[in-house]
Image (cartoon, rainbow, N blue to C red; front, side, top):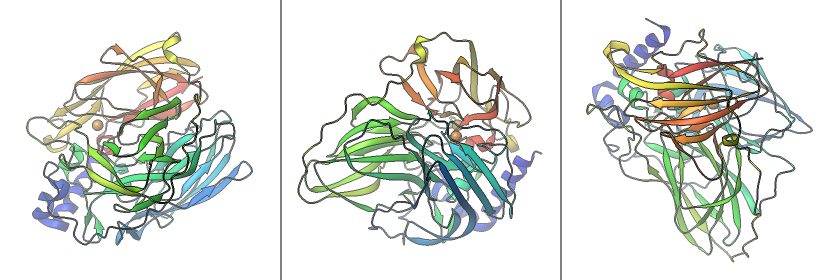
Length: 491
Ligand code: C2O
Ligand code: CU
Ligand code: CU
């Protein structure tokens, strides 16, 4: 039995012992049912708040992140959870290109962990964004990141990445935002910026609920969908002008379609930085891990709701349940109150950036990756989650690539569930879905939705950083179950 399987069994045992069979059948123990009863004592009506900001100065940032198990406030309740620096989400890190970042990760979780800077284009070697590290309980580890001078402005985030424990630790409260700003970005006519870290979790009394085996296979979704750790908080905006929102889907598994009726929404950035032009959208689809930056304008005084519509991400097939636990009920994330005199609507810039387009370049190599779920091969005859028929092995290199080449990867999914494909370090350009070319403006991501029984084709320019890192399904339960591979960039 592998260590991961042992952990998984231990986890499942703890659930049965802790909450009994009734607990297993509640909440995402039965991910198809809508939530049994309301979350009861969870207070709503909080004010919208943002995580504390820690910003670099003069090209340097020195920050300590203390990952600890203990009491924190989540959804207005004091609960036993995990947090960075005592708050869920952890502090927002504001960086600039050229920064040297020293980050001391203090581990007081009572379990091993590590840290991943999701979406940052930085080295994955040594004490950089290295997903292979184990930081043991009681240890302090110094991470160092050098943000390249040409790093795009954008919205990124950090979360633990120790294989086998990622979903549990994120669900328990470990995540935070990273914003990279550039002095030479085209200015956006926004009256203010805001960061919205969207997470979900389930409370079981004053604790975070544990996942059972089925919840892990489907990808757990929490009963509570929170914005910056609060349930349906109220945000006050002034009508007429634009606000610039940085939105992160930091849920473990949940996909969501965000809508804000009565508002004008212009998307200005995606996962990996700015879009070519501000793009009017009616809603925005975010898989787990995806980000979007929006210019939001509410024309006049009134009350509006930001809602997350559930997204069907397939199921296990054979009647074993579907992924979206909330059924078809949209979750209200935020009450937006526009009050006061409407300001004049500012003029928008036409062009934001000139994005690279890899559709026009010669490809140096092609490969195919197959994401699959197979019955009877996983633990106890359960489901296995594989890429090219293999579960994750940190000691195996699955894809060796040459630096300074462009590769085309066709990622196939033979299973009845979606698996959002995520590559560390290098952004990917979506060039085809099921073999049909993607037209129009270049679409860059670091998490690409890979629908059930289909394929996506992406192109990647492997620049700058030699060394090993990973690609995986960003339904983090699937990643923990083995749906992850190792890529090594060679000089
Ligand atoms: Cu946010 Cu390897 O992931
Ligand atoms: Cu990542
Ligand atoms: Cu998956």
